[in-house]
Length: 176
Image (cartoon, rainbow, N blue to C red; front, side):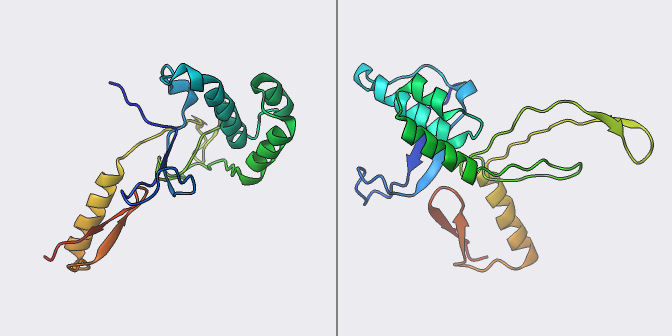
C-alpha cells in the first residue's frame, strides 16, 4: 500500500488563483518517519530541504535554532523566529488515566514526546503500567454516523447543512 500527498494542501475550489499562497490550508501531511523517497525535479531539491528544515523548526520547539541554521543554511535570525513560533504555539498536555483526545488527523498537526512505562498502583492496590493507545477513523465515517443519529433522533430536517470538517465542503441532509 502506498500513499502520496503534498506536505501542505491549500483550498482549491476551481475558481481561485492557484498561485495565491494565502488560501485556506485544508490538509497537512507531516510524518517524517514515514516519508518515502523525495520525488521532485533535481533543480528544486535544495529549496525543498531548506523549506523542510524551516517548517520542522517551526513545528518542533525542542530543536536548536543555531544547529538547524548551520545544518540547513537557514539564516540564524529566521531560525530563531521559527523556533520562538514553535515555543509560543505548541500546546503540550499529558493525558491523565481515562482521558481521551479526539481530533481531525489532517486538520490538527500533532505529535508526542517520548514516554516511558511507569509502574504504579491503581485504586484497588494492584499495579498498572501506563500505555498509549491510538485509534483512527475516517472523517466520512464519523459524519455518516452523526447524520444517522440526527435522522434517528428526529432532529434531521431536509436542507439542513452539515459542514464537512477539514475539506472545505458542505453536505445537505436529504428530506426524510
